[in-house]
Length: 538
Image 1 (tube, rainbow, N blue to C red):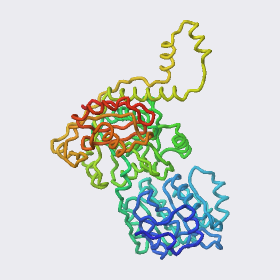
Image 2 (tube, rainbow, N blue to C red):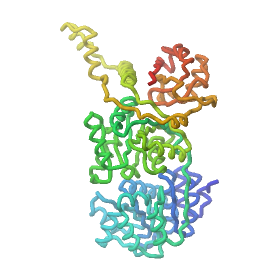
Image 3 (cartoon, helix red, strand yellow):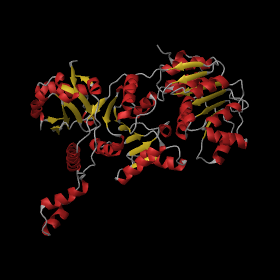
Image 4 (tube, one colour):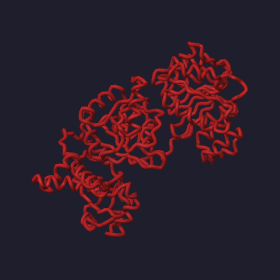
């Protein structure tokens, strides 16, 4: 059982701030790390973003601050500006009732004059990026001679971004008797070397990634040839039509190429990676947060520390090299109690990696068939109808005079309606062909799934269906199953996988039970007319 915050021997002002936030019990990383850091131990903490690790080092740091000394006593190094600001904001929450503690953030892309002024006010705690920290050291505008605690957050990402030399420079320029803590999602060999050279017998804390972190996300994947991923991605975006999505690629080159491809095909997409100037990063992120940009194409490093509450979908253009990174990626779409959808494009040589990730997260992803042009257009027509119905239902404006004038000019109602609808409806599209890679028989045999009654079946035995009720209608899997049972005597054993989207739900149904669904068409559910479509299986 984790420790209660009230049981920790920490400042009363810190406890008051934690209580104000509504927090009662520590998370796993906090439970293990806080007592060790309070003892003054060096440590290596392996934990994912979102596990509460910022408080795991921020709370002990506050215990060591002497507010009467006008010196920098704690330094937290972060890989990106976004994560720096995020950590800074967490500290601000903790010092709500301890105004004597001064803290500042230092990062690239911000005015030096502003930072010179902040540093001249003698902050006790500095949260900074490596490059700008080195700049201030060289300018002699920052002094670490009185440093008591040094924390490196997301240490593995700083190594990937090429900050190895900067980190060593900072480590060498701080007192040897300091306390040093490294927090990282993974622990590559270099981090262990840093520990041997710059830490004193560090305590290693490893927090296992719980299945719960991905259980709220519907995890789907498509088998596709590597050369056909762009064409498949376009089909996926048109099929699901997410309001927002982050598309992850493993390299900056793929990010740029994919971003250009989507822009060429008139999608609201833009790139985010480490080679962009800070002003460009801010511009792209500003558009994405304000929902003026639907699709963010990003590398893992660039996406670390982004303060985004929720996105509808995460797409893995390529599976990541590390299992933990996969969990971190899809966590972007299941936050704050909301459910999400993740889709992975898996080409033949990555099938082994797919199996490794499934073993790591202890969940089998659902394989989907490449959507046909007909299937995508059926979805598009359904969305068009819903959009028009909502526009008509919500319209309160009166244009009788304009309509009357059009009638006088010889236009009939049908002509007027058709002309106006052409301006708001999404048109049908044609798509380049996508070749499905042939699986080995052994792979097919391994890809068996269970029905709701626990019996094993092959996915192909069921048909895919679509109902125009989704999350926005309060639909959950158990709700749908109960509704089917109550209204058409359709039992759960006849239903396979259920994937719920904002406005619709896709589910698998046994062929023998399809006719029962006809009884539901045109029935009302919360003042909405039900429409069910049986999708064509390839």
